[in-house]
Length: 426
Image 1: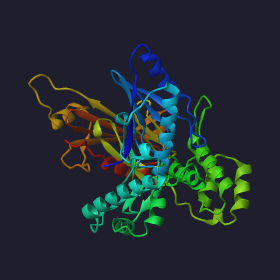
Image 2 (image 1 turned 180 degrees about the vertical axis):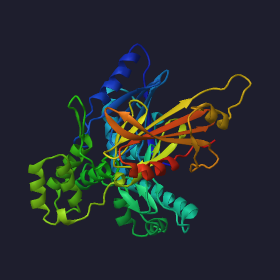
Image 3 (image 1 turned 120 degrees about the horizontal axis):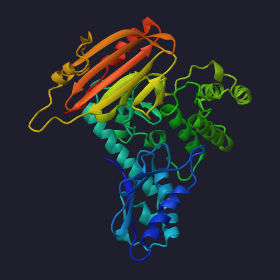
Image 4 (image 1 turned 60 degrees about the vertical axis):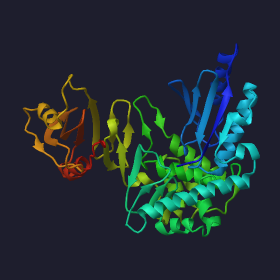
């Protein structure tokens, strides 16, 4: 359920490979509309993907026999993004010299053909009303919490804050009932869509910052590697977006306390002092923005999921590893194929792993998934640590989650993380 646009750019004849190269080069050199961000191009089977903005799904470019298929979903961001992406496509067509007919373009909003921005907003509004109807009819009045809309599957918040979580925070059921009845849409829709107006306005930059702050910032000091590299792109981008918005319109509602907090986490004393003068009451307000301030549900390989505190660093280069000053969580998932004519028995798989170790049975969120756990003290780099190892089996996969912590009192937290593990749906 969504809106988007697909353009088929002809790539035939002697200049086929040259046209394909032009298309890729065009996206590689495209400047980002979001301050502090870059456009990223990723190779994929038969083409490539483009991370055009941090708040919408990737753009897909697929090379077929005689054409390049460029497609994008746009409804998560809104009509402003859809119009912006059409401008990107216009420039791409000029760059390649392609000749397009109406048959080459499939725009579910019809904006590509008519270029009527008000009509585009109406299309997005109709989609939002349909979404509200779906949510209210299926989940309304049942005390559902934290339904995810336009959120990445890789990580979703675990909270009781609202009926729906979306890239700009939380929305309650009352708001969606109003949307369903088409009440107050003139105020609700600009709040619901990140990019409601045409062009990069002050409100666009403000909400781009909010999206980054809600989803991408863990509210810890930026990670510094052993080589000295600093991972502070999310912080720098959010700050750049906020400054851009402020320069255009100082009257908007800004996240004062979080703005000051980000400057402090970066160790930027000059900016901190500037912001404290700009927002005298900002330091006295309790920061509330950020899904990663609470617990999150993270997607693991093979469809496993686990819940853990969001205020952790992450490294996905070698398995899935999260850590902070209190605890390190390392998860590996192994897949295997049974022999010909054999079937997998998760209980037998579990028994075969570390069968000589004194493991204890452990009850997971999926009570039908066998699991066992071992807690022991180890020595690592001259330090005494507690190590909790959880092993669970489901289908043709085996998951091993190992946690390390120095304080025995952290054991309850580690057990809570283990107990949240959910096996993939069969």
